Length: 359
Image: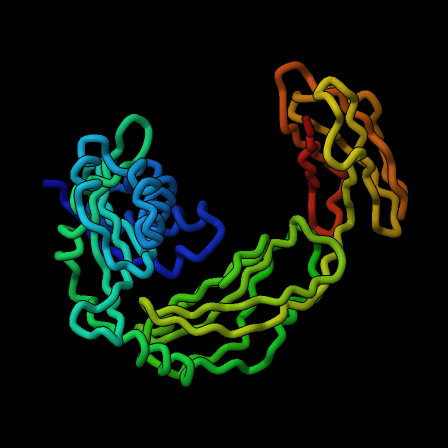
């Protein structure tokens, strides 16, 4: 039997940056015995497990079936529907076999004993790598629901009332200030939590470039709630309404804030037509604008050898836009135009733009 070690990263699952998540996990693995490892393609495992349990919670058994091992599908179809209201993947276990995995899922279900209450608990289910994909090694899901662990017994309604009382919004805005385009920003949210539960935080509606995270304080006490902003695809004023959802198992409460600030991008790109050329064989026009008051000499324009520069530029004049023309090489797609100034601009040594090919 594979040796396993158990760790929790539920609060990291809300982040949009999966490479950072995996780096965090790998750091934890160093502390474990050398024979344990992450399951193969952990990101795909988490994604497929979440879709599988979401389909079950929605009663869409036919969709969930495609995520079940072929040898177990008849038993899965023969099992009765489950009274699940919601499901959320909260962790995976490391083990000696990277082609088999144990996934931990938080389940919210109708309590069979109390018709007016819900119960929430964490289950563990097995997954197997087969033919380049992860599949649930599940026959009758009732078998794993019977193995719910000791985290069960959360009184969802009372916990929700406690969270609503203990989560205080200090102000309704978050000011990120003026940010140079491409720079990451991390600021504390104006939220104070007076309780002792280890909460997770997520965005009720996911938004591009924004993510939230619950930091853990000393001795397991609640810490800060952080907002991360990726300014790469922004330029100009920022005013984004944000609904934050705080979660402890099945209990959730929402708080609303508005993210304010401004992003200044010293160099911006504009492709014409904006949705790409009519044919990949057509030339591609990209207009590069220097938004600063100083001329920017260029060291290099690069497409990583995926396109030829039909018309190039050596200097971006102050507060002006300059056209470059590219011709895609055969059998290439999604080239990236990268600009290298001779001297860093606003602390950046390169600026990149992914070209749209259209049809």
